Length: 285
Image (tube, rainbow, N blue to C red; front, side):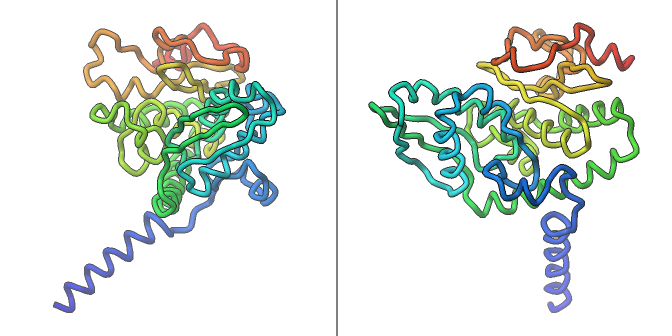
């Protein structure tokens, strides 16, 4: 009896240490200064809030910042006063910017809003703080494994590795329209997600292993642009996971295309030019 309890205790202890408390190297871009900034969410990713600065009018940045604080605090809803009559029209620009700027925002599952004259009333779908805490630690340790496995790889090998790794997860067909599978949390902790989770996970991984990339959002899809030898290419690992039958109509290779099906990304003017030759061809695959 005692041996059995000791065994269970040791298994639980090993699991906790290995998945949640094992020392990790951490994000190489994370600095003490950044951790003190308003842009800091957690240790997984360093954001320059590029989309906020280029999509949201500067006079409405305070709304973006307020929403970030709300989500971090675990608020379900808030009432944000608009200082300008037209600020309500910027809500979706703010929403999209949050989605693109902060792939590490595990608590940010989605949001909606009611609007009144001179007010925005956003309501949030988010994880609770305990889920967020253990989710972050679990993801840090998974990324640490990826960093060790890719440490001696070339950039080409790293990109192929990330594609295979991400596409090796399950596409969440059952809850395709659920808010619960829209973040990197579902990808890393549940082993299943949809395009938003795949793209956000890819973005976080790329930064941690030294590959430049951008997240891309359209009305119905999310993917990445990845840099290779100074040029940018389409990277869409969702396609490797969502179609078991690669011969099925509608399938395209996430490394073998220069456009993403019928989807046109939002804010195309904010991205560098995308090469007309697909990565698969460049890599000789």
